[in-house]
Length: 140
Image (cartoon, one colour):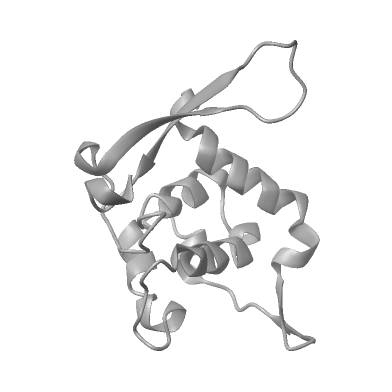
């Protein structure tokens, strides 16, 4: 299955995670290494973003998720080695990348972004467009 360019941003995050796959099975906290337990939805063919949402209390231990989408990302990237690229991309559509609000991906909360590319170029400005999911217009 080929993916349209709309998955570029999420795919970049995913590919970065695989570049450091040696560390994906471990979390380093206070100088100590702990192994991340297997997450059943990561290997399930029936997984949905609802499975990610059910981990809310484990990800946000104090209940506050304001501007904490990085905690969703950390949870997923620590378990990325357990899932397929398709599953990882699907799970990344389950939360607002700004506020951290749990969302259900749909056309209603999907916005197209066009950003300048970073890196070597031929003297011209190049752009990449992709879609991301947000909980509301202000987060865009």
